[in-house]
Every structure is written in structure tokens, then in C-alpha cells.
Length: 322
Ligand code: CDP
Image 1 (cartoon, rainbow, N blue to C red):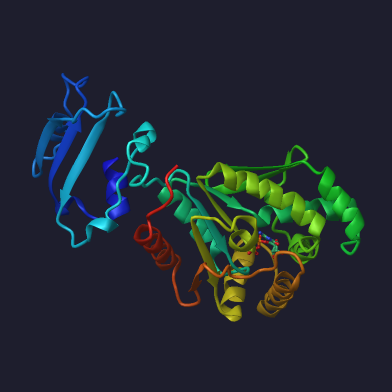
Image 2 (image 1 turned 45 degrees about the vertical axis):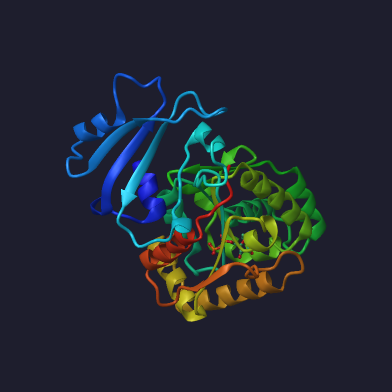
């Protein structure tokens, strides 16, 4: 809890002047201040006091009041109420646990790298929605269907079983019972995915699954239309962009590292085709939601992008309570 408070408010242990714990009368033998002393917090003044009896209050709870030397107005301080304690002050409670964060942008803008790091930092699930479109494209290619056959593709989409899991920070897609994650980034899928993704029937199917995940909360979804269409009420919306040459360079590096033989002009051409299909399609095209924070990552390292996003989340952290 102390770490979470520190993260939400951006102070360091050196900024702490003192800590007051207030406890309900059930706590008699081991007091939190004593535990903190035993942890080696010898520089900080610590005090235990009894919680004021209030009608409807929790029968058992520990309240931690940290006196910190930071130059911040009161309204910016984020209070953290864990689990049941949120009932006490839903107006003040700040919780990462149910956040929904939308990260959109074109290929090579750095979405997945930053989404994964942000998810780790905030303890949220990370879902790469592009992997879902890729999985369906893989199935269409395996069936040998022409990518122009909207009707056939739509009915395949309707009857396909897709499960999306997160394992070790990676989105795994189970297509009709088989884990196809490792086959999703092949040149054939790269070339076909934006064609398949333009069909309204395909999108309806996948967007419904994405909305189920967003409704559960505690998730970062990365894609093209999350903030604008899938979940416009996301707590935070980011749109990452970058110059086309830089995006192509990044993608080339990834493809070469994973053993694909491809040249920079080829990657540039593929990205341009995908950008064009994604931005011009009729349903839910790639677009920055009007209320998204737009970040140009062309000259930023991944850690710098992460810092920006975290900065915005902490600054505007008056998130709706659970
Ligand atoms: O990883 P990369 O940025 O290359 O692409 P991706 O996120 O795996 O997405 C592959 C393709 O799926 C995109 O080019 C879009 O055509 C489509 N897509 C989409 O239409 N909507 C989403 N929410 C995510 C991906």
C-alpha cells in the first residue's frame, strides 16, 4: 500500500516526515507502527492512534496518514483505499485496479512496447487487439479463401471461436482451440490483415470480445480504434504517432531480428498500404479520439514514452472509483 501511495503521488521515502496509523479497536496486539519500525523505518516518526467510531464505518481497518514534504496542493493528493475500504470514501478513492487504458496508433508507433511496460508498471492486463485480427486472417489464409470475399470471410468470423489470454506480458490467441500466437506475424498475415479487418462483420465479432474485456476493467487495450470506437469511455486514451520513415525503420529491425528477409523499401511499402487501408476504411478507421493525448514518438526512446504516459496518468489520476 505504501508503494502504491508513493507511485500515485510521486514522492520518495526521503520526503516522508512522519506516518500516523489509525486502527480500529480490534487491533490490540501488533500495531502497524511497530511493524514499520521492525522493517527498519527508523528515520520516520511513527504513531498509532485509534480510529474515530463512525456509524457505518468498517469494523476492521487500518488508515495510513503520511506527512510528506512535497509542493502539491491538497486537491492533487491521491488517496488510496484498498478493497472494502473504498466504500468509506468513494469520492477520494484512487485505484489502478479497474482502469481501462486505450492506446491507439499506426504500425511501428511503439504502442505494444509501451502498452506492455505500462501494464507491468500499473499491474494491469495487456491485450493486443491487433493479434485478434491477425488470428482471424491466419484462419482465412489457411482456408484458402480470397481476401476479397467479404461474405465468406464474415461467416467464417461468425463461427470462429477466439480466446484471448495474457501470459508473461504477451497476448496469446487461441483460435478454435489452438494457440496460434507464434504464427501471427508472418509476411502473409502482415499483407492480408488490413483487408480482413475492414469488413464490418469481422469487426463486429472482435469488437464484442474486446468490449467484454474492457467491461471487466483492469486492462490496457492497444489497437487502432479502442479510444474512438471500442471503448470511448476509457479512463485514459493515448494516440501514438511517428514519422513513416521512423516507423518503417523500427519494423524492419523487428522483422530482421525474427529471421524474416525483407528490405526497408519493402517494409515502407507494406506500412503505407496498411496505413491507407486502416485510415480509409468505412467502419472504425484508425483515428485519434478527440480527447486522446497524442504523442509523437519519432524522437523518443521507449522509456521516455512510458514516462510521458505515466506522468499523464499520475497527474490526472482522479480516476472514477471502482
Ligand atoms: O503490430 P502492428 O502495429 O503492425 O499491427 P497490429 O496492431 O497487430 O494490427 C494489425 C492490423 O489489424 C492493423 O493494421 C489493422 O488493420 C487491424 N486492427 C484493427 O483494425 N483494429 C484494431 N483495434 C487492431 C488492429
